Length: 168
Image (cartoon, rainbow, N blue to C red; front, side, top):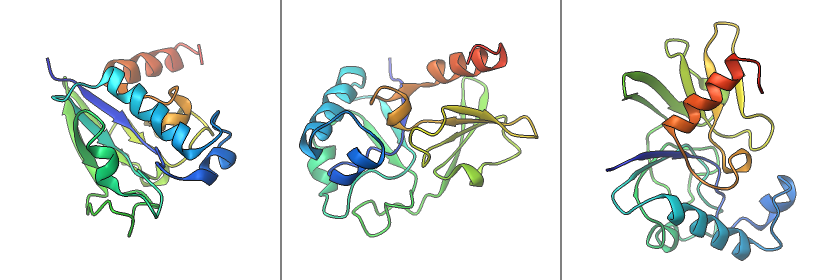
């Protein structure tokens, strides 16, 4: 059965992101290989991956990574994707998954008040989930807060439930 996964802020090939975000890798190559391994452990070639921005560094050959990672990838443009091989013009997506209306964008400030659940990236490890004054949920899909792997809608909904119960 095909699944849909979400992720953000992989920053393939970006040596400095290791220091900036305190990632547990010695080199960009080690980081890249770990991300590929973690993703392929969860994603089949038939699954869909919604990437919410910042796929790789300037010097990255996008295809070099995509040919090694399972899944059909849909890219939402991140602030680091412009002129970096990700030629998407998509800045946001509206999805209906199992009856849940979901809004996807890279930058949290661009969330949509008309959607209870907004999936975002950009903030790395600053937070995992927030609720706005209008009671919208913002869920950070970045790899830095999800053990360097993609996540499913079920995992997102479980995190929201824990947040609602005050367990986070």
